[in-house]
Image 1 (cartoon, rainbow, N blue to C red):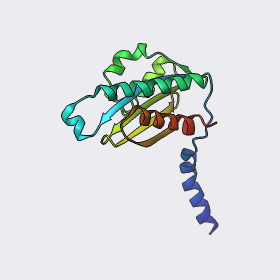
Image 2 (cartoon, rainbow, N blue to C red):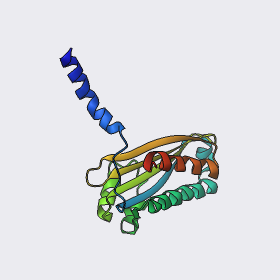
Image 3 (cartoon, rainbow, N blue to C red):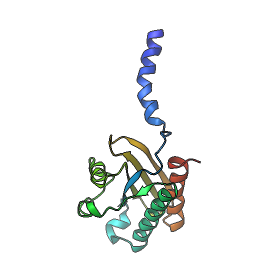
Image 4 (cartoon, one colour):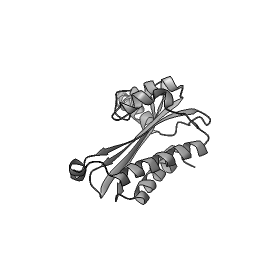
Length: 169
C-alpha cells in the first residue's frame, strides 16, 4: 500500500509542478514580446482574406499587453535586432523554440508570444505564453475562448488573461 502511494506521488509531482502558475516573476526583468499572431481557421478567411478590423484588433491587444507589462514594472524590449527573422517567421508561438532563441539574442529574461485563433465570427480564442529564456521553461500559459469578433471581446479576453493568470493581485 505504501509503495503504491509513493509511486502515485512520484508520478503526480511533475504534473503538479507544471500546473502551478505561481512561480513569481521578477519585476524589472527584460521581456521580449514577439507579438500576437492571427490564425484564421474560418471559412470566411479562406474566401475573403485578411480583414482590416481584425488586423487593427491584433494591434490593439498587442499594445494592451505591452502596456500592462510596463505598468507591472517589466522592461519590454525592442524587437529591432531580430526584426528580419521575426518578419519571416509565420508564427513565433509555434516555431520550435525560435521565440526563445530570439529572446536570447535580444538579451531578454523572458519571451512572450501569443495567438488569436478564429474559428468563426462567433468563436475565437486568445493564447498567451511566457517562457524563461535561460531554460525555455513555460512560466505562464493560457488560452481563453471569446465570443464575438469585436474590439470589446478581444480586449476583455486579453485583460482576463493578464489579470487572472499573469498578474494576480
